[in-house]
Length: 237
Image 1: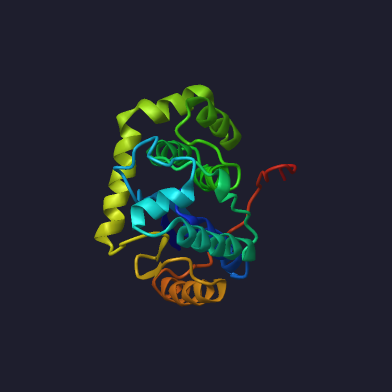
Image 2: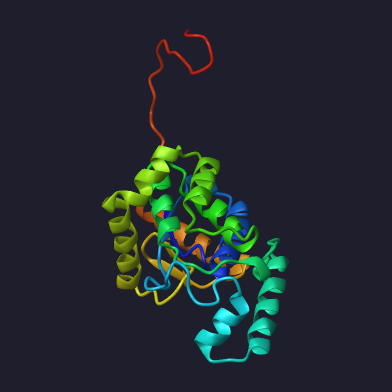
């Protein structure tokens, strides 16, 4: 059964939602029959690479939302505590607000090598915990290597129009499915979970979706006639 997860690497609830999903999946007895695909969704495609108040997230949000600095900081402190409750450390005092497109392009390339989830995790950590600038070329090369990409592959991800198109296509796809924000989880194209739900809720939805999928796609046991065979890492007999 396939699960598609749309997220933005600069969305604080997406990282929290990732942890809650992982906890739910770890408790799911049929997790080996689940395929997970991470997909791109840009919350603010028009965001400048170096916006006003880039190095002060509290002021950046206060200015954008029309609230006081103190109100913004209080909200973010609540967010830091929420993240801590799921095992994440958010160092928002040193976060650098920026456009997320370059990070998404790297994720799209990483997906072609089966490294999509790893790319998500590393970029989330880089932004929310390590305070990395996700529009700095040297930083992106460093993070790309941590993901498992070469410097040349990072350059390709950042310059080939294909990966820009993939990001935009997946964002449009999410909207066509009814997503108005992220994280957005779609299970078997029949169930959807919007937002960073608790693991118990995710697990219940996972079980319901899997039960339907299993009815539609029953696992058939084959009637095998045995002969001489070679087995990986063992002798042929």
